[in-house]
Image (cartoon, rainbow, N blue to C red; front, side):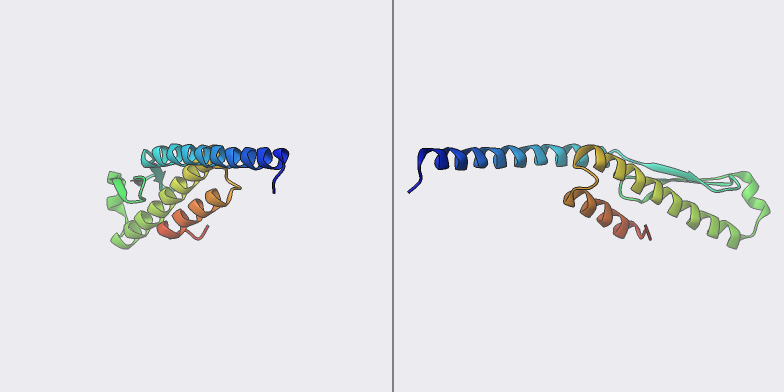
Length: 125
């Protein structure tokens, strides 16, 4: 049988656990809200290509400077791909910051979420 202190201690642990779950759910909701609003932009080193990605890492905007006409199509394509990857890396950094500020960068959940985004966006990390 349990004595009074053991039951009280068990009830306190259950209350703590319940509060912890509620706190983590609130943090996860805050992260999801922030993540859904994110976008990231990168510009090529020569300034001729600018790519913006949305929260899913998809191209939301692509700007090509008129100076792009002075280079080959192959160079332009390579610049677009490289700048797109840089924009995705910027998005991952933003998500990492938001993760650190909500669920914690060192938490199992935080590490898992950032790694999942890296994988989904094809980042080498």
